[in-house]
Length: 638
Image 1: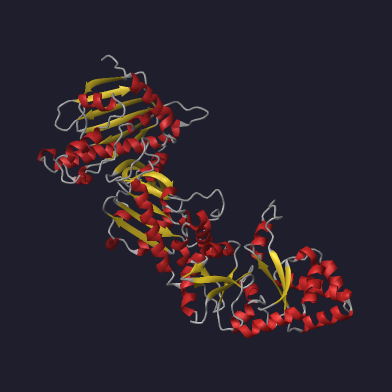
Image 2: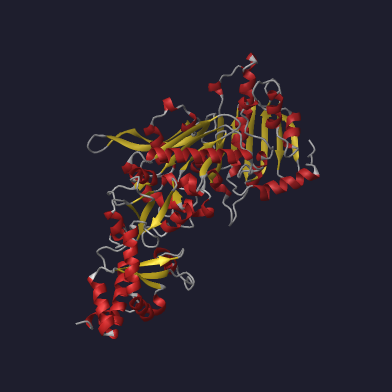
């Protein structure tokens, strides 16, 4: 039969198919298997009303076979098959989907189109075979027809369609692989292990059995005996037909049929983690957008989690066929640690089915998943030990989520935050802190340092504790940014003990401090002049009780924020310095010694001023510019 030509537009599209649309050549097997699955779906659907089909669900299967000598891969199905006219229509006209047409035709008769779960929609997947094959032969016999036909093409040069013989209904797609080159080893796809790997990766959850001849070795007796009279044994190769796909994924099964241990075992195998997940989230959503999901909160962060190399995202399936290994659009960045799978027949896929169109359905699923994860983490907080483990691994991510995008998700995430605190060793949420607040407490107090122990030792915390109030301890660089973004919680303002007014002095105490400051204004001015630009101000403190001195700040940049920017490599911190205030305890012996020196020996008073500033820096964990000079100052007092 004379070779027929693809139409000009089709020829150009076929060239585009082979060279541009798909990013991974291995996708070809997924596409051909998906077409085979659709063909079986059609015949299975027809069998519901046509007793002549004579086949039951258990009779259907897809067979994958590699012939190394002939250099071919054959995918066979016992589905509905095609007539010569359908071959001309479906294979000779690129981007015409017979499956899509079948769904529309049957949908007119069916009460619910969603029941007809057909994968193919675009009519282009078949041509992905030409990425690895230099010739493709399709032999098909339509259900109800007496004769079969053969479609054959070597690509853009056209195709032929001829009559042929075939015993049973169904379709065989025979792909003759291209010759190997330095850049591409097409022969790799002839290896049974490689074909099994691709089936497991992309088509493991296709609903029909995918069978292959699998080689295994077993020990058998040879019929001979050794010197000791024992039977000799040898390992012989045995080839047997085996189903290589799972078919029904765990997330498609009912909760009654799948235990928590089953879910954990699936997670460890699927995501190669030796540790159980801390939580499992199962979703079965039906409605405008239907989908099923199984999500996991890991017990530990991957080694590369906080690096640029880490790729977040959920595995995305459509009708059991894997579309994307990591779909980042399904997860908000604050929950990028979550792993799992989402399976939906309602997603709008692009022509290659490798990526998604950014549509409303995707956003709906992502929004629902975000809420489900938040609910599961809230539930996890009831188990203090588990949540502490989660927080150690991923707490920083929640904090980054609060400050990201100018606090867009702060209200959504604030209840997940936990902090070390003055109440005990357990981490405490903002809600728990609020519950412990006495009615007389007006603000939420916090102290920032590089550890909870150092934060607790800050002089400014003493007055808060003596008043019977608790403190949250901020120990991460991002913490103060979190507090600034939040501003308040449950209408209670956050108060930084190192920067804000603690609001704990009585009017009498304030008046007494102001009176003493007025009496010592010349001394305070002297100390400020001595210290110069190192401090923005020197004042008598409302905060100090037993300690002689402390550093506080004015303005938005605190000591911890300055430390953070100073730690960044190459950062210009000239305009990012805290306005430091040296606060002196007017009732401490150190202040009395300073008063005496100011009256009798100005040089000694200047040395004491510098020593007090150095002590305040050390308490605040600020490195001294010249430790040797500080040591000299101290020794000069003797």
